[in-house]
Image 1 (cartoon, rainbow, N blue to C red):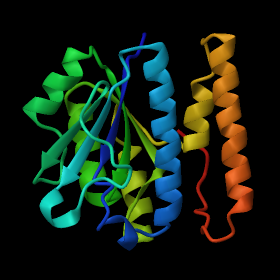
Image 2 (cartoon, rainbow, N blue to C red):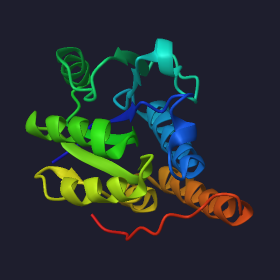
Image 3 (cartoon, one colour):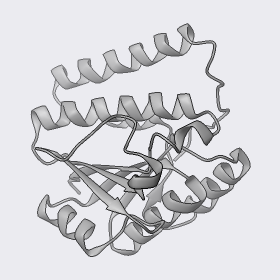
Image 4 (cartoon, helix red, strand yellow):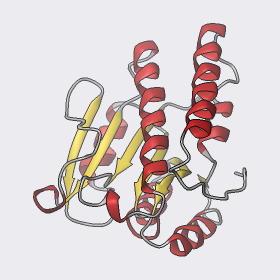
Length: 202
């Protein structure tokens, strides 16, 4: 089956992320995901980025300063889940059938958004090291539960990028491989960021 994929970012906000365990690593990994999707938008118009902001008047806007424009849509929300009629309509407008989901917090907004998207028939990739929580144990427990839900996978960012290398043209393979190499260099340079011990699994 051919998948058209959207990136959904959940509550990666300026007053939220300082409270998140390993927040710097989560932000860095989400930044790499955004780079992937902006590259996809260069080659295909069917790779939208949808950003959810929970009570932004209280918790601030997203840390990446993304705003609504071509290929990107920012949605205000006042519930844990991002799933709404508007979101489903937006995904259907782009003929999306797979969602790449990242953000915070894993046991609340990510869990509810992922499970409701799966119930609506979407394949969902929850990027485990591009999600986070104030409580690391709740983060991992939620990921374990998500893996049991049909249509949901929980790859690491590295594993997800490697999966993108299959069946795409050489120039795209080179771009993704360069991103992987840059990720390794960033990881080696930064001794301030705590590493999460995560298994590479689907």
